[in-house]
Amino acid sequence: MSSVPISTGETFIVGGIAACTAVTISNPFEVAKVRLQLQGELAKGAEKVYKNVGDTLTKTWKNEGFGGIQRGLGPAASWFYIVPTTLNLTYHDEYAGFYEPIRRTVNKLAGIQPDEQVAATSIMAGAASGVAGAMCGNPFFLIKARMQAYSPVLPVGTQHYYKNSVDALKSVWRAERWKGMIRGMDAAVIRTAMGSSVQLPSYNWTKRTLIENGLGRADSTWTFLASSAVSGACVCMVMQPADTALTRMYNQPTQTLANGKTVGLLYSNPFDCLWKTLKTEGALAWYKGTTAHFLRIAPHTIVTLTANEVYLGWYKAAKSKVKPAVTHE
Image (tube, rainbow, N blue to C red; front, side, top):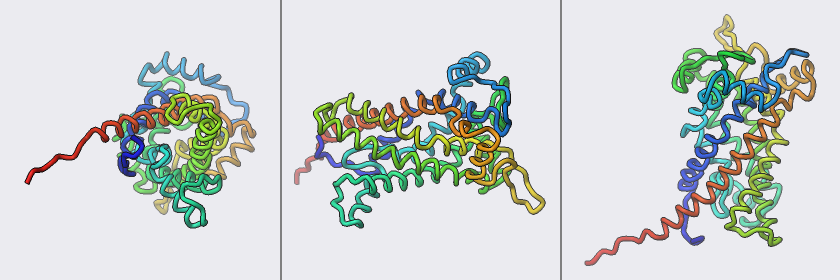
């Protein structure tokens, strides 16, 4: 089965389906994470609306129902979200979205065998594929965060009400044009580069280590799960401060100046956001929503990577059974 050729385009499609499966399961934790990150924004000692991730989910379910805990699912699961996700979440030994082509190219430029796993080139490839994903998906990440932050009962942060994903994109376009569509992209690039730089290498390293030490087989679900869990934990630890900055950059109120330029009222860039958050709320504020973030990353990463391996195996098995038509002359 391993000899069946799979193109980069095919891995994008398979990875997209896997990511779509995962985001449906992990989205409630993303809603909780966004709201925890925004509560008490730039307000020292502010009263907490939500105590923790469990309290956030309970209150959201009680006051807003199923629609509340799944706010933002539309843009999260849309094809335009799946495409950039596939760039840095498609794991396969031979093809991995943009990650493997980039890693192999960097290896060649450095005089290293393309198949050799080197930490430095793996980190570079992971960061590059992550940046590409962040740039492609920014408008949808933007409206996702704003839709998840909105609550008609227990609001935190600036409130942006949109009827649906299409209405959200139209509203942003009418208000700011292209400037609105790329708002927060600098924070998204930093956040995604940090996460992707460890996500792919940690997954591949864990998987290879388990196989080489006889702790798991290459085609074992246990191997996929263990590798995914380690990868998710690494991502969460590395990119949490940047993720908090990203949420706040996306959700901040804006103002149109006399010259027609629209600017954020709270932060000028992600570093300004981190600095103001540190001064007002303390260093721990960078890690607001960390538990919710891990609970979002863990199932999302595990389901995405495991589903991708399973779906890819199914696809290759089905493809190997398709025999070319025989013509008689």
